[in-house]
Length: 184
Image (cartoon, rainbow, N blue to C red; front, side, top):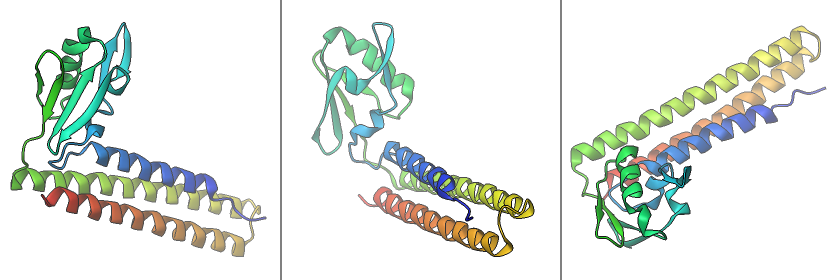
């Protein structure tokens, strides 16, 4: 009998996917509609994503335009954006709401790069915790004679390979997002 590591692989994949979602919301000076992904508007008593109540477009490199399907939602969308604290101030002209992304200063780019690195390091810690849990399960199975010593060693080697693969994926994502943030 061999040790099944697929559940641990799935947990590591989820950790990396969560980090990538967080990275989408870090703005790099260019308009990215994904900064609005976690912003919800009260739509007739139901929290609804902005994408569910308006057209979102990027007419210029540093501008997001939000055109609500129901004009009565303008104020609610503005309030939701301000409450979400995404660092952008909505400008309302009566028909559409515009979010203008300011040019990033060198200091702000460095702050964002630190934030990218921190989120990456947190993900690596999560992956290493998953590795520890997997290794503990292998040791427990070996102790209970469900696995032989050799099977236990093989399983631990497989878990380490899996961990290395995901840590490399995180490092690559950190490098990519950092270079995106640091370049104009």
